[in-house]
Image (cartoon, rainbow, N blue to C red; front, side, top):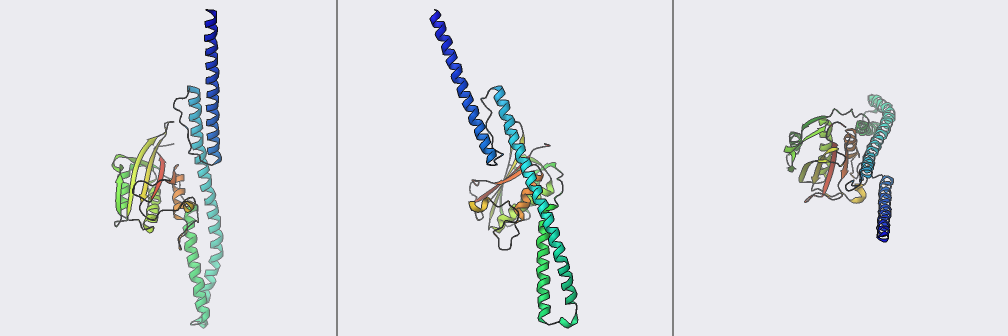
Length: 295
């Protein structure tokens, strides 16, 4: 009898040791995956907390929420850095071009240069300064974003207003009648219109908008706004740079549109990304994620 008791205890002890080792290996792997995600700046990476013991589950939920917090602070810090850079650059450029424009206008007003090559040269300088000022003014927008005034509003009416701007486009809208969204309506309108404007310039004939409301395992609610189009697809080597300020592939582009979109969305506590896999029937899909309610 004692032998069976000893065997039973030994078996139980072995089972506990095996479980402990497997548990530690599982925790070690989770820690490795989370560390790799942070090293790769993938702050949206999360691991499921389902099936874990109470203490491990609580720890995993904290780690998941910490990644999200780091991402938000990182995005906001990056936006603030670009704002400061834009503010300095626009200030310095405007200070340089202002006297050039003033001197050019003064010389052009003199009668003795009328009809001469000097007049044509000064006119060319004036035109170049004007284009530079327009260019700088577009960048000034990046450093002058107001703090968002977020409220709940019906997304269906919001989308209707956007579609009116592009009556020649074929629109496909899903789930808009079911949802409201928590955002600064004016700022979100500017961001969405910028995305659609780019799509139209890429020869898009159809634009799809889909709304989803999702909740994370930690209980945070988000509204997902998917904007798809059938225009020219964005190559991978370009896709990784499209939200970087001043980056453009257009001959006369400023590189401000999508960068400004990202700043607007980040300022509202959300994020924007280009989907790795476009929605069915489309060449490109952008995803805007916004918190559903006060953070």
